[in-house]
Length: 589
Image (cartoon, rainbow, N blue to C red; front, side, top):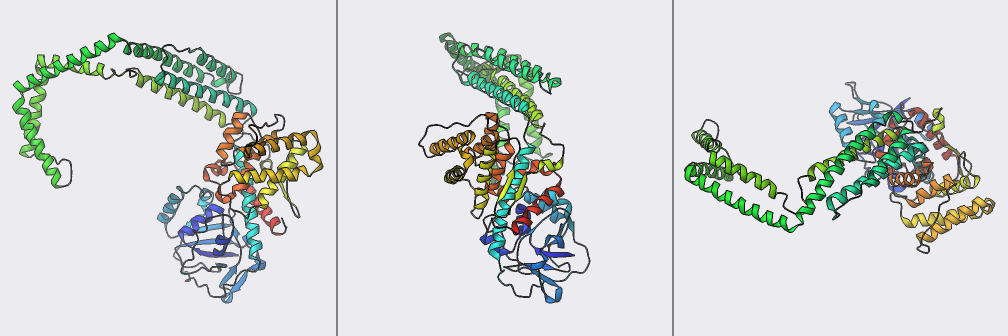
């Protein structure tokens, strides 16, 4: 059976942030979403419950739901079966929900508006389910009934908070998995990034430094080393890309040497005398050109100037800088004739042509008279940009090679909802690391009733304290690996409290490295990504999972979720998340 919900444009937009729709009261009480965005329309909606219609309602926007998305046991019939009240959240699934618009322009405007809001991330997923209303008769929405306060609302909201946290973790896990590269690729990316940064440093030295001589050998060696790393990788057939980089670097070195030589000349006393001579010569040519114009075309220039002054005055009357005389008018034709006479004189008078050519040549030389400014600067800058762009192209090639698994189900985290806990199974790591990870994940989701739009340092310190205490109570913390973990948490906690100058992360505990990457860089997935890449850490998906669970699905931006939009089976993910939600409804976590 199909049901309909009346909604307006702005509230509909909000539903694509959480991929769900809730009664208005939920947005005021729960820990995610913007509590200022949802408001009640004049017709068709209530405060405490969602109003579902049996027949298609008359409204600008409407949502069509499949009955399988609803918990029928709490669906209350109203108005002789014409409407129903539903007291909790409806979570969308692909193929089970559609969105009705007034016309095609409404759809285009809605999609365009969604582009500027980072948290609205599921438009692309459901855009194929947007449709335009037909001419069939529709009933005016009428709520009626008793909008009673939902029994068990705290439980519903608690489950929503938990699910938002877990879904954020699952989706971030997938994004981390989809953007992970092999160890070999990671090493190549680090090598290329190091080369890129080194050449950027050379740019600063060449253009801003005071060096008279630069040792270019380190840059050549770095390029050769990176090329050799590339040669023994899976991309050895693309090694010709480094020939382009070598050619650009050779050009940079050649022009930089000329620039350094020129700058050295600029600092010499003889150069200063030469500049003064050129300035004097320029003034002489300026005087000669003025005299030639004054004796031959002065009256013509004055008449042209008067016409231009008239144009300025006409423009001022209309609030413009200038208004030109229209084509065909006497003033327009006269102006063209005067300009022709002036140009004719300048082109045919040999004395004027020679003086003007010398004047422009001196002017060009003087444009580089400032110490540190040379005729090579623009070309050198463009070469550095070309080098950086070519490095970026190679990096894109490497980052396009993602870790893949044989089975689609292997993409999903092995997460189980138990009676009073949530457990994540992780392979190929120590038992101690696995226990710590589950402790931290449980602490994060169990505090999902608190808004976490911004992850503060105090929250991280509190999380480390609680995790260290909980893990320390377990017998497994007494093992050798457990001691390493406890020491890492302890020294990190002291570092955050400014009681220690540094802390160490063990090299042979990859899951601990992922955990610490999140704790050190909790403010964004991009910071986690750079930190783990620079350290050569793997298991980025598990660091992302902790971050996503902390901020919650509603706060995850589309810049991250776009990664998986075209690379995941939507039905598989929807069913996986739906099973988690149903399990949460029956548990006490």
